Amino acid sequence: MTLLTFRFAPSPNGELHLGHAYSALLNQKMAKAAGGRLLLRIEDIDTTRCTPEFEAGIFRDLKWLGLGWEEPVRRQSEHFAEYQAMLERLIEEELVYPAFMSRSEIRAFIADSEKRGRDWPRDPDGVPLYPAADKALPASERKRRIVEGAPFAWRLDVDAAMARVGRDLTWAEYTDETLSGTRHVEARPQDWGDVIVARREIPTSYHLAVTLDDALQGVSHVVRGQDLYSATSVQRLLQQLLGLPQPAYFHHRLILGPDGRKLSKSLGDTGLAAQCKAGASPDDVRRLVGL
Ligand code: GLU
Image (spheres, rainbow, N blue to C red):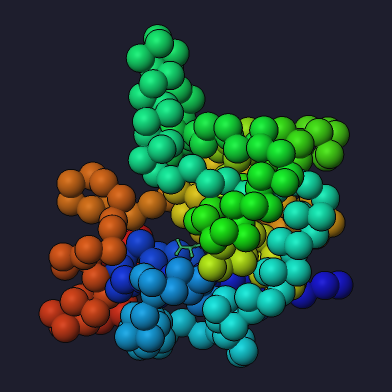
């Protein structure tokens, strides 16, 4: 039988809060109940926002909480060559294209279209979809701009990708944390439009790195917050395009702040370090998050 593998994958771009504690502890609890293992992955591809200090804080807070994980810890910034290889496959297969529009150009394009009475589609997070005007650029023009050093991002041509897959995609979502049953969820990557798969300076994006890492680390169970439920559609599509195995998912409830909103990394007293400093014990944290 293959080993059941769970993972907790924080980004060191801020301090951990109660929401992270819940996710980490739930992964630990589910892995234990299933007789599986728990891995820790540091998602630090955003080299401008991630810092060694935040990373040290993650280790400190998780150890304090009593989380145990199997070594080695995978740090994404050490694996750019692996992401690059995947990106090159997508480039060769013409499933991604260089997108040159800047944020202000995108805004102007959309405002112009909306002036003409057309509601611009938005992704599940409420962000307007990329206009995809660059898809029509001839190869020679793309090359010229890249050689000249124009800023760009590699975007997935979602229509081409879905056509390549040629069938409906679904993923298995556990109905609760006891892993007693799953339901099949239809993946709708088109809802996100042409997402960024890599940047000029960084050969990956959140979606590409997570998809590849879950496969390379043999993750069979992705347990993470409900806020990433819709993102699973894009990751499911990338798995299919790259011939990677598909994990099963459980998207757990979110811990909300006193204002009823999702916790953010600009903390207040929901930060784990602040809880510890104020004299809370790891058991107090468990109680606070309902575990
Ligand atoms: N690194 C992501 C975050 O901190 C989580 C990614 C995932 O669990 O798939 O929100």
